[in-house]
Amino acid sequence: MASKMPSKTPEKQNGQRGNGTNAASISANIPTVVRSKPPQVAVVGAGYWGKNLVRNFHNLGALAAVCDTRPEALKQVSEKYKVRVTADYDELLLDQSIDAVVIALPAVMHYESAKKALLAGKDVYVEKPLALHVPEARELVDLAHEQNRILMVGHILEYHPAILELKRLITSGELGKIQYIYSNRLNLGKLRTEENILWSFAPHDISAILFLLGEMPLELSTHGGSYLNAGIVDTTLTSAVFRSGVRAHIFVSWLHPVKEQKLTIVADKQMAVFDDVEPERKLVLYPHRINWVDRIPVAQKEEARVVEIPRSEPLENECRHFLESVSTRKAPRTDGESALKVLQVLEACELSLKNHHKLMAVGQDEPSYYAHSTAIVDKPCQIGAGTKIWHFSHVMANSVMGKGCNLGQNVLISSGVRLGDNVKIQNNVSVYTGVELEDDVFCGPSMVFTNVFNPRSHINRKNEYRKTLVKRGASLGANSTIVCGTTIGSYAFIGAGAVVTKDVPDYALMMGVPAKQTGWMCYCGMGLPKGNSPECATCGRRYVIDKNSCREVAAPNEAAASASPSKSTATKESKEVAQPVGSHSRTAAS
Image (cartoon, rainbow, N blue to C red; front, top):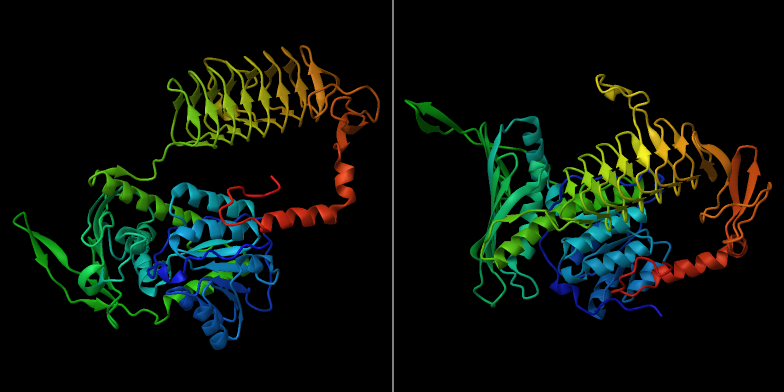
C-alpha cells in the first residue's frame, strides 16, 4: 500500500535559500532527449516557499501536480492553477508522466524524500539544505550518479544576476586580487524552533562565497548567542580562511531591528557591494585606492559606479535552469556535489559552535577506508569506501583504488596505478606505475609486476614504461611474474611461480616458465573439463571453446530468469518504488 506523505506541514520549512559551487558532470551515458514541451514536474510541499515554486513552474508550463498533506493548501492550488493535487507521495512517484520531483519540505525531510524519488527514477530538485548530515548528502549524490538522475539543490543566489556579474568581475580580473569578503544577513524574524539561525540564514552566504571564490575554506571558527530559546542560537559570526589567503566573515541574525542582505568584496583594484534589499542600486563598484605617501597608506576615494544588471527573478532563473538540465541531461549549476560542499562548511560551523568557537578544519572527515598505523598513504590519492590497508604498506600519491580492496602487509601501490573494486593483494607485492587491475583481481603473495622490459640501474628508462592490464576477475598465483606490456584476460588463472611473457586469453589457465596454457578455468575458479562445450561441475556455468578463445554462454539460472523478463522486471520496479520514507536500502532487490 502506498505510504502517505509525512505529516509535518510544509509551512515550517526554510524560507531562505542559497547557492552552490561548481557543478560536476552527469554520467555521459544519459541520452539527450528532444522534447516538444517542458519536462513535467510535481512540487511536493506548497507552504511558505513551496508556493513560489508552484507559481514559477506553472508559469513555465511544467507544473503537472502538487502534493501536500493539508487539504486547504491543495484546494487553493487546485482552484488557482487547475492542476492535479494529491496527499499521496507514492502516487506521484508511480506516475510515469511525471519526469521530476521538486521537494520543498522541512529540512529534516529532505534526505528521505529525495532518496525515495531518486530510487523511483525521478530527477530531483530539493530545497537547501540537501540533507542535515554530510554522509546522507554524499549518499544522495552517489545515488543520483548510479541512477543516472539529475540532482539539483535550491541555492538561489547562484542564479541572481548580481552574483553572476560579481563572478564575471572576479574571473576577468576587473576587481583585482581578492583580499576579504564579508556578508550580513540580518532581519527581525522569521523565528524558528526546529533549526538555528546558522542553518536557516548562513547557507545563502556560504554558497555565494564558495561560488565566487571557487575554493573551500581551510579552517573556520563560529561564535554564536542564544537569547530566545536555550540551545538555539539566534546570531552567529563565522570567520573563515582560504588557501588563496582570502578571509571571509559571515554575520547572520534574526534579532535585528532592520532587514539587511549585503555582501561586500574588498580587492586591490576595486571594491564591490551587493545589496539585495536595495531596489535599484543592487550592485555598486567603488574604485577606491590606497596610495603610499612617505611610507604611510593614504585612502583615495573615487566615484561609485552602479552596475546595470538584468531585472529577472532569480527563482524563475533557477526553475528554468532545472528544466533545461532535465531536458539536456547536463549537470545543473547547483548540483549535489556543490551542495555537499556547503553542507561540509555548515557542519564545521556547527562543530565550532559546540566546542566554544574552536578553530575547525573543513572537509577533513574520517576516511571511509582503514589504514593501519604503520601504513603510509600519500596525498592526493583516491581510496574507495571499505578498503583496508595493512601493516607497512605504502600507497603513493595520484593512485586510485576502488571500493572494498584489501592490501596485505608490505604492499606498494605506485603513483598512477589504478585498482578497481574488490581487488585483493596479498603480502609483499609491488604494483608499479603502468599497471591497472580491474574489479575482483586477486594477486597472490610475493607475485611480481614489472614496468620496464630491459632495466639497467645506470640507465633511466621511465619514458619506456609499458602498460600492463589485468582484466576483471583474474587470479595471479603466488610468486608468479607478469612481464610488462601484457594483458591478462578476464577470469584467467596464472599458476604459482609462472612467468607470463605474452597476452593471456579470458579464462585461460597458465603454468610454467615461460608460462604456457594448460587448460581453461571457470568463473568460479574451478578447472573446466576438456571439450568444445564444457560445463563447470561446481557451479553449472557453460562455455564454448573455439581455437584460442573461451566464452560463457549461460550462467546458472540465466535461462529461467530470461524466460519471464516482464514479470521479473515489474516485480523489481515495484519493490524499488514502493519503499517507504525512512528505508535505508537503495534497492529492495539488493
